[in-house]
Image (tube, rainbow, N blue to C red; front, side, top):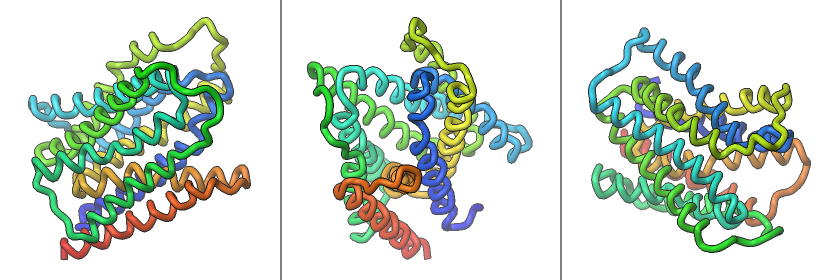
Length: 295
């Protein structure tokens, strides 16, 4: 899959896997399996994804300092963002935090333009702008329940945005020097390194569901996220960061919402519907723009 449109194919896989993951991610937690332990499960499901990736390279991976550093940094940034998010959600509800996090693609887009000199036409820039609006709309939720406690949630939310945004940029830089399989292998190492912190954030005094609809279900769901992360690495290998980052952020929620719509037969809020339309339109615009420039 190394054609000029390889980034599109891998991005579609990201959208599919992460979208389905998003539709079921809350089920284990609702059944009594904490999200922090869900992180632990995710980190370990990265291992089979890394093994499959390395099998493509006949189990050979790069051992140079640059690849190791880039890969581990990517793993640590992605993992740290998740752990910081867990803490942020203790101080503020999701409806305040996720709209801010939806602006994450701004970070890699700005960095890619400044340092990698990535360019696109007005069509591509319009698609990028629409994807940011779409991501903001798709994170909409009714402001029910308690509000935020203090301002720490804002600082933590910005940290999540920065860690995930910088991770996307580093992924693109790393892919210019190293192969995607080696990068993902070291990303897995980075994710596993933060497992102890996830365990520290877990309240083991509360009942934990270690059964089929708890821990086992978490494993089934989290492996989707693990392979989604692998496909993101491939997407950045073949595509521009200014396109891959917005699409991989704005489009998966569309799949999540569609699945939720089918399962629960409820019509989303009109703001979310607008976000879905904008996300699809923005992705089409970016793909068309890149296709024109690659011809």
